[in-house]
Image (tube, rainbow, N blue to C red; front, side, top):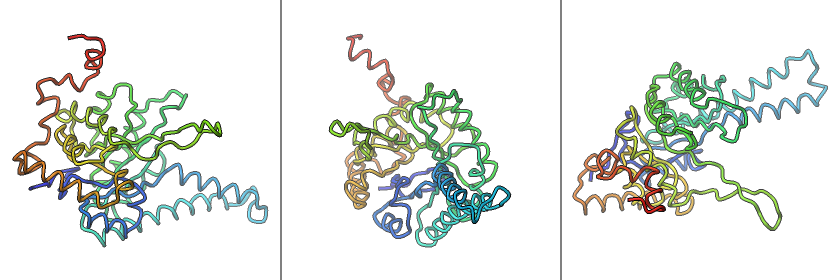
Length: 329
């Protein structure tokens, strides 16, 4: 079976990409993921907020030490620059080391929330030999300040694209008011791909201690439906590659995403719950299904169940909810 696919202009040996996680934060694990069949890896994200928090913590320590700090000192400026450079240099070294050890594409990830100097870091990523770049933009929907999230994202994209020539993917969450229009608009900004969707932080409440706690860390097997819906609705309309993310635990979910029109899928939770050997299981299940259905390549069935090609495209739309529960026919 020919499992190759095009994503961000890159030719992948199959559609399975390991998403950003601790498993992609060191070269040893990345090599093992390649051996198990992963077609590409997205390196663990560099978080703008984490670096800024690290800088602020170091600055607070310096302010409390009168021996090294006074109001005329350049210590604070030095700490600000040094901490950022230290973190960025570590990430660059990871990119270079991974590129030396594996043949599959290595895609660094920047989790950015603002138009700051972090967008300039994209050029260093390109120079380090990265195959592509993923912008993981998580703007906070609970922010009570009125903001134009779409314009903020477009601003970040524009600045990054002005710095690099390598392929750029954008990973977004699923809480935009006008989702379809937002996805279409973002696909026309010059990016090479969209990843649908970011997995949101899930809090919980412990009824014994009466405290807020971390909720389930991993996705659930049914979570793939949300990205599948939007990929099916828009895969024939966007101007870039599409990758499905969140809830992809089985080969059936992989198949459904490709039938909807996805070029690739990103997996993480299934690797933690079932081991990295599950990559091989996903690929074996995909190949077996293709043999049974008579498909010699992914291209033969990609998008066959998108809204453009199914008899009842409304099945992907909200109107179906009304029909099902109100008896409208």
